[in-house]
Image (cartoon, rainbow, N blue to C red):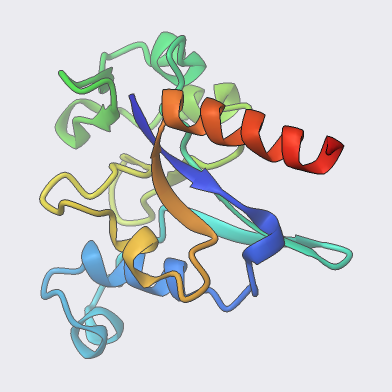
Length: 159
């Protein structure tokens, strides 16, 4: 499975990923349109900082997803690719998903009872946040490829 891999050592904290996410989910996909919308789009990832470490936090699309298990209406569900999606029309605003998410990356839509979370930009080949990251702190990786890379990095450090 492909996932968005976060490398905090490369993150500048510039929030380009947050801006790109909002623009990608705007009614009209441009920065000017996104900021001038009556109800601006909510971001679906959050850049945080603890000391000198900056890191984007976003949905991990967990295999055994606590948010999906907690969703009493079936609004949150896994699609055919294994990504967790939200059927807004089924959401009743109980916010069980927010309470269940161990990463704190699900938020409320202030305009209607609907959860807002990363949807991996299904209409795009590469998610907007990944494409916008100037330092490649965010990148798409296959889990098997990532395991191989991490083993090689460990060997290089040991040698």
